[in-house]
Length: 110
Image (tube, rainbow, N blue to C red; front, side, top):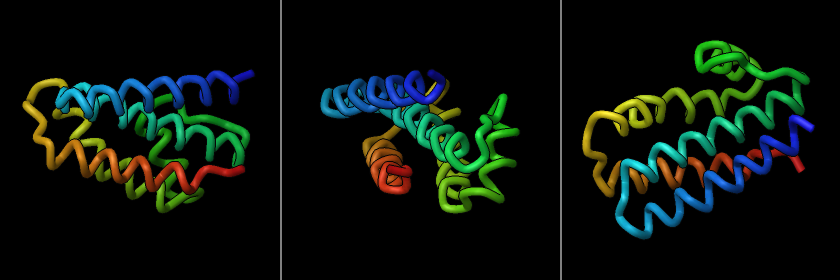
């Protein structure tokens, strides 16, 4: 049941992030792309460890050892996610986040 909810959230976040990006709503796009990345991370942790992180710190700790590529992406992009709440996000940053999330999708287990 948890996996299905995560997959549903991932799909929803990606759909709305793509729409926001196409409408040049870059703050919203970055927020939702990052939330999608978190769902990707959670799916990988669920598959590899059968557990989820309770918060970003715990998730990062689990990812560091279990999925280093995802850890690198999530930790690098976390700053932009936080910035999206209080700063204006440029198209360049939004595109970077979008591309990182698209790459992270390829790391999902089948």
